[in-house]
Image 1: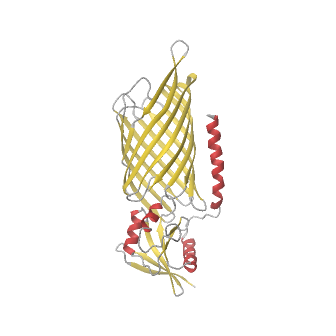
Image 2: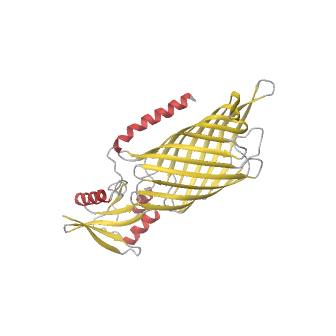
Image 3: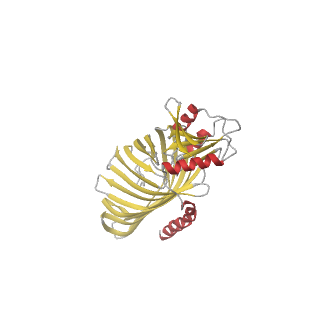
Length: 148
Length: 245
């Protein structure tokens, strides 16, 4: 039994080497999310950026990637199967093929089917970070978040 | 890990080692040093039909179980067991909630336990039909996890009714390409013959990729009170790997 105890302690010691990447982790806050959204949109092209409420656990949210990566407009060669999920900001970045446009209804369904809620999509428009809020009927309401 | 998405399914295999060091009556070591040692493989499968409804099946296989009992003349008698345990089927019904920075669920779970073999002199598993009802609540943030649950069981034969409760805290971490959690888990097991056991210990979960997950845990019985002459003061060690699709 003593040997098992030592194995368990050793396993935890080994696992602690993986934890280093966690040091700067922050709980999700709206201002953190919006700043992150703006940076992602400035740095990337051909993407769709979605705020998924409740996306705090990457293991539980695997279904989001599985569902979204099946969409025809998703470029599966970028990120991980075309999808990047950030549990601190709850942002999902979807890599799109050249000229690809996501169907809002399909997007909402894919996320809901995975057990989460797609709240809004972020876009840079002129000097604003716009949030396109999803309604139940898949229509969107545009909200201007920031002015540069 | 249970797939949260509709149409998700998975299976896992884990090995469990249990060592109970004393034969107890109440909290007293009536026969200290008469031990019980069990090696079990657990085979588990899950299918998530819709995110609110899933079915789970658990089937244990006892690789070897051995216990020492008093022979009535000052010596000890060794009894052994091996083979399939009881099939456990559950139908968890989930209600998920998503908030800004937090996600969780409420669970209601009807269960049945089906014996797959006949009783003999020593059985590690109950080998009696049983029905159970469980409920649970859990939530997590990007950093922390909290969960509790309880399940009640009644059986068709002589086995007393049981309540199992658990309280788990966890810390979530990320690696460059994946993530995992470190938990502190506490289990309370109560039987209607006044047996009660409180076990507690750490667990480590790691998500190797979107498909493969593994887990290792160890628990020690902090409080062990047996309503009938039975083994106690145990250590439980589990290590397992699972796949989800």
